[in-house]
Amino acid sequence: MAIVYTIASGKGGTGKTTTTLNLGTSLALLGKKTIVLDADIGMANLGLLLGLEKSKITLHEVLAGTAKINEAIYEGPGGLKVVPSGLSLKGFQNSKPDKLREVMTAIIEGMDFVLIDAPAGISKDGVIPLAVADKVILVVNPELASMADALKTKALTEMLGRTVEGVILNRAELEKTEINRNKVAELLGAKVLEMIPEDANVRRSAAFKTPIVIRAPNSPAAVAYRRLAASIAGEKFQENSKKEEKESFVDRLARTVFGGK
Ligand code: ADP
Ligand code: MG
Image (cartoon, rainbow, N blue to C red; front, side, top):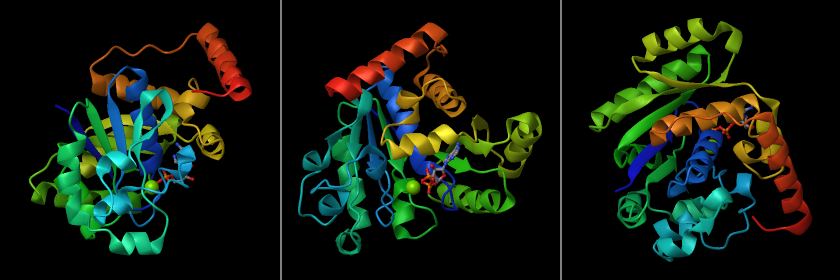
């Protein structure tokens, strides 16, 4: 049975969507059957990062009861399955967040991992993704507002009878690694699962609508995401050698020239 991870934060813009996409893609590349679901139904971004924004059927239609979940599952990179949300305000208004519970029952079938990209804040559409999680991962930035809001989300998660598996410290300054790591762990009372450095490749990859773990697998942020995925999958992490880096560039080139996955 699948393990359901909800990627949450508290504060917006900390890197939940980036994390969901790159952790999901890395798990898929490790051969794990993985599906990512954009439960940030008000500010849907996951599909945008993959060029799926024109999809007619999304989680909105499923939560509004006008489509079946199978119709909203798209093929992502590396065999990743993706359920995007729609961009329209009307679609958001028609969605019933409660229906996510039903959707989860259908989606976990045959999967190893389900990753839910949760909205920021603690409104109803934010509570349900926490409530359906087996494990919650908090994405924080090394700043006080982000920690304070994450602490609220952690309290809410625990009120719902769920557990916070740990914290991802995103956009971390690596030279201050230990101070940050210890401080965050102490402030939030949770383990720091991984530190993702500030990396310009994150934005570049977004512009190319390709996860950074595929476009720039040896960039600092991608290495951190791949290491986290290996740890979650219970596998030993192997950083690509320089040779592999070159090959993956050639693969990438081939993909651009000849198309395909
Ligand atoms: P959220 O889903 O929590 O709102 P996003 O994943 O959309 O956050 O990230 C917010 C912005 O920060 C995006 O523009 C993204 O490209 C950028 N970003 C996220 N993580 C990093 C990073 N490690 N380095 C550089 N930019 C990042
Ligand atoms: Mg987001």
